[in-house]
Amino acid sequence: MHIGIIGGGFSGCLLAVHLLRRAPAGTAITIVERADVIGRGAAYGTVNPEHLLNVRAGNMSAFPDDPQNFHAWLTAHGDPSPASTFMPRMRYGDYIGHVLRAAVAEQAGKVHVSFVGGVAQTLHAGTPPAVVLEDGRRLVFDRIALCFGNLPPGAPPGVTESARNSARYLHDPWKARGLEAIPADDDVLIIGSGLTMADVVETLSGRGHRGKIAVMSRHGFIPHRHETASPVTLQKPTGSLLNMFRAVRAAVKAAPAKGHDWRDVIDALRPWTIELWRGFSLADRRQFLRHVRAHWEVHRHRVAPAIADTLARTQASGQLTISAGRIVSIDWKDGAFDVSIRPRGEAEILRVSPSWIVNCTGPQGDYAKTSNPLVRNAVEAGVIRPDPQQLGLDVTDTCMVIDAHGMASPNIAAVGPPTRGAFWEITSVPDIRGACAQMAETLLKS
Ligand SMILES: Cc1cc2nc3c(=O)[nH]c(=O)nc-3n(C[C@H](O)[C@H](O)[C@H](O)COP(=O)(O)OP(=O)(O)OC[C@H]3O[C@@H](n4cnc5c(N)ncnc54)[C@H](O)[C@@H]3O)c2cc1C
Image (cartoon, rainbow, N blue to C red; front, side, top):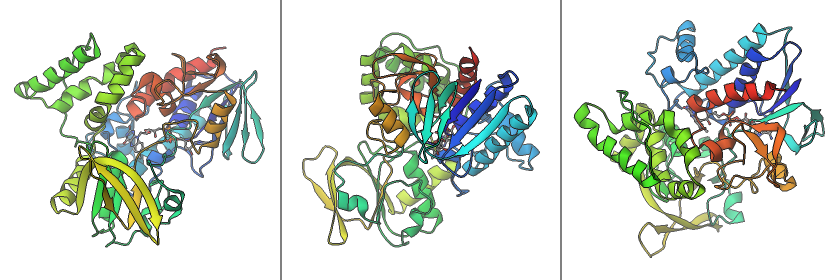
């Protein structure tokens, strides 16, 4: 059997590792990756050592059945940091590369792994399925796993073409060296206040930025800080969405009296999160997304203490301001930005003219509009379709993609962030690693 993995980030590499562990002799695995390096993706491809993991080293093992694997690897490679440390993300990329190389070496002569550099552009359903690369190469497989990660960022509302074309509008903050162009005294508007914003502020701060940094998002919430964990166990919340919400709030309220923190309660939900989401009706999911999502994100996906310190310090000095509101329009006229903002709860429109704008609104949600050619073409051709919540792809319980006619593919699957609509919490390592192990079994079933 020949299995094609499209995308060689964390999910693609880990899926290959799990396939290597289970595949019968004679299996071939091909990883198609557009970047020069394997195993890094957007998260672990950073070269800035101040970009830290937002999960402790002790919880970042690639293997659910060997929870200390990453920490043991660090120790074996001369890093004595305790398991509670938030390590640089680039170090985690080193680890994933090591894990993959070790698995390939272990199965050498039994399972063949090859790497193809290039952008996958078209996905062909059928038996066998195939992908065509940007340069015209056609790769035919028995099974295909889509591991293309989060989609590139979408544009904030109301951005004109001229604003987008300005060199001072940084559409994708992960693009190498974009932030380096910003002079230290210039003022910056960051749109979006999540984890990407935290990285951008950390980068600017690390470079000695002195200009004002204004952050604007719909709610104005920023990710909370991690504190020392004191684990609790929580019964699986049951009943209606409102009942569950009330039960969690009550547990949070009661936590301090028992020597715990709200964070311990939120973390205790982790084993239930996917199951709860899968049990929600579509109406529940929509209600959650409308009313709870913004709170969930900042409580569940927290920042390392060092990053929280930077945010607090720059806020206290007045350099960083965080506000809630909607961007109405962003134009570029006569060599300057003209940004119209409606502050939350106010009718009046504010006009500002920052020197730079950094788009931190996160991955594009609309799969039909994405700039990822593979995804856009496959949606257009009806080979895949967005899930009803517009969080990712529509997939079955076993992650086989569903086409525009509602038919599950027998040989094309998706892993990781593209399956968010089905599983909700499937974007970080502790969630994806289990999905990769399961997917390896699904793909190898004849
Ligand atoms: C900035 C950032 C920080 C994060 N920090 C953490 C953290 O600290 N802890 C944690 O648990 N999780 C973290 N995450 C979550 C992260 O999404 C996952 O941990 C993981 O990286 C997802 O892996 P992936 O392989 O699915 O996606 P990605 O890592 O994005 O990899 C997808 C790969 O597919 C390739 N690709 C896409 N389209 C094509 C195509 N058409 N042709 C060829 N190749 C293609 C891309 O080049 C990329 O290498 C972070 C995410 C981000 C974005």
